[in-house]
Image (tube, rainbow, N blue to C red; front, side, top):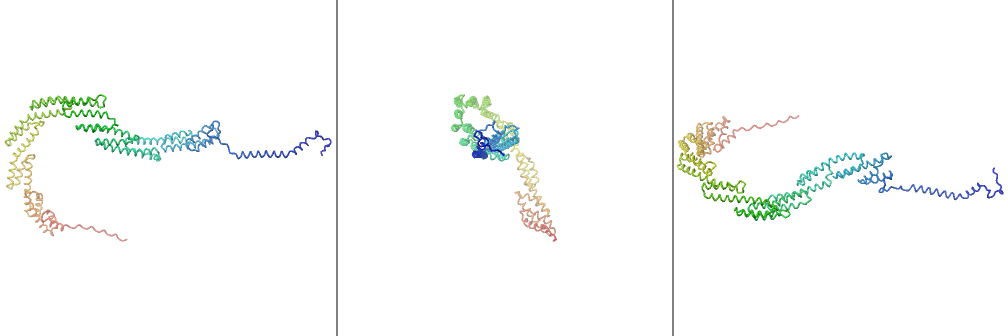
Amino acid sequence: MTQTPDPKLITPETQPVTVDTAVSWLDRWPVLMAGTALVSGLVGFGAVVLLLRLPSFPKCNHLFLPTASVANRLYCAQEAAKSKDVAGLERAITLLADLPPEHPQRAEIDRFINTWGMDLLALANEQVQAGNLEAALGITQKIPPGTAAAQLAQEELRKWQMGWTEVTRIYEEAEAALRKGDWRTAMAQASLLPTINESYAQTARYQELSRMILRTRQEATILEQAEGLAQQGQVSQLLEAMAKTKTIPKDSYLFDQAQAKYQRWARDILDVAALRELRARNLAGALAAARQVPADANLQEEVADFMVLAEAESQTWNETVAGYQAAITKSKTLDPSRPLYNQAQIQIETWQQTIVALNILNQARQVAGGRTVAAWNQAIALVRQIPSNNPLWNRAQAEADGWINQIQIAEDSPILTRAEGLAAPATIAAYTSAIAEAQQIRPSRALYPRAQERVREWQTRLETLQDQPYLEAAQQAADRGDWQGAINEARRVNAGRALYNQAQNQIKQWQGRVQLQDAEKQAALNTPSGWVRAIQLALPLRNQGDIKPQVEQLLIQSSNKLLEQARQNETSNPTEALNWAKQIPPGTPAHAPAQELIRKLTPNPSPSPAPQASPTP
C-alpha cells in the first residue's frame, strides 16, 4: 500500500510532477478531443475530395512529345483517330510511332497503329473508287511500314495500278477519239469503264467524259452539216458552213478541227469558187466571190493579189499579143513581199511564152493562107518550132493536123476521082477496078473514111451483079414448082454477100413448101399415123404467110379424120384412141371434141385406201 505524503511537507516546489501532469491533462482533455475531431474531419474531407475529383486530362494540341507520358500519348492518339479522316489517323500514328520496341505497352500500341493503318487503307480505297489514284497513293504512304496494313496496301496498290493503267488507256483513247470527232468510238470506250469497276460510272471524271461525249456528238453533227454545205462549192453555202463552225466553243474537243475547216472553206471561196468563175471568164463573178472571204480568215492580202491577177488574166481572153502584154504589165505590180508574188511570176512567164508562140502561129496561119501543098508544109514547119511545154502547143498541133489533112486531101483526091470514073459503067469489071483504085488510099489518110464508104457501096453493087443470076434461076425453078431446085440455086449465095439475107428468106419459104408437100403426102396415106405425121409437119408452117391457107386446111382435114378414127376405136382400143386424140392441135374444129374424148378415156386415179381402225383392246 502506498504511503500518503504528509501534506505539511508538500510545497509547490516539492510537489511531484506526476501529480501536476495528471491534473493538467484532465484539465485540457476537452480541447484535445476537439482538436482530434477537427483533424480527423479535415483528413476525411480531403479523402472525399480526392475520391470525387475528376482526373486532369492533357492538352493534346500542345502536347510536347519528348516529355509526354505514354498514357497521355495514347489518350491523344485515340482522340485524334476518332475523326476517321486522313489527318486524324496520321496524327494518331505519329503520336505512338516513335516509342521504343521494348516498351511494355508496345503490343497494345502496335495493335492500335495497325487498326489505324487499315482505316487509312479503307480511305485510300475510297479514293480509288472515286477515280483519284494519286490521292490514294498519297494516303497509302502514310501507313507505317512493317504493319499488316502496309503489306495489304502493297497488294492493293498493285491491283489499283493495274486497273488504273487500263482505265487511263480507256480515257486517253476516248479523248483522242473525241478530238477527231469520233464520238461513237469514245462512247464505246467509255462503256468499258463500268465493266472494270461499277463505281467508275459514278465518278466525276466519268460523268464529265459522258457529258463531253454528248456535247461532241452534237458538235460533230453541226460540223457534218457544215461539211455537206461546203461540198456544194458555192460561196453562199461555204459562208453558211463557216458560220456553223463558229458555234463550236474554244473548250470543245472539236474546236481545232472547226477552226481548220473554217480556214479551209475560207480558202475554198478564193481558190475554188472565185477561181471557178475566173476560169469561166466571168471576171465580175470572180471578184465578187473573192470579196466575200471573211476578214478573220486572215486572207485579205491574198484576196487583194487574186483580184490583181484576175484582172490581168482577163486581158488575155481576147488572145492577142497586146492583151498578153497588158496582163504582164498588170501582174508586175505585185512586189516580192506579196503572198501571190510567186504565182504572178509563173503567170508572167507563161504569158511571155504564149506571146512567142502566138507570133509564130499567126505567121504560120498567114503562110497557110496560100492553100497549096507547099504553103501548108511551110506552115507546119513553123508551128513545129513551138516546144511541147508551151501553153499554145496543143493549139499549134491542132492547126498543124488541119494543114496535114488538107495536104492529104489534095494528094488523094485524084485517086478517089479516078475510082469514081472507073465505077461509072456499073459493070462487074468497072466496080472491081474502082475498088482496087480506091483501096490505094491508106487508113491513116484524111480521105480514107470516104474512100472506104465508096468501096463498100461498090462492093455491094458488085456482089449483087455477081449473085443476082443465082436468085433469078432459083425463082424460075420455084415458078415451075421445083422447090428443092430453087433451094439449091439460092444456096449458091454465100454468107456475107450482099444478097445473102434475101436468099435465106427465099430458101425458108421454099423449104416450107417442101415440108407442106411432105405433110400432104403423109395425109394422103389415110392412116392414123400418116395424119399424125402430117399434123406434126404442118404445125411449124402455120405462120408462113404464102402457104397459110393450105396449112390450115391440111390441119383441119387431118384432125377431123384422126378424131373420127379415135371415136371408132374408143371401145375396142381406148389406149390407142386416147393417144390419137392427144395429137389434135388447138385452133382446129376437132380440138374441143378431142379434149372431151380425152377426159372420157382418161382413167380416174385410184383413191387412196382408207386407214384401218385399230382393233379394240
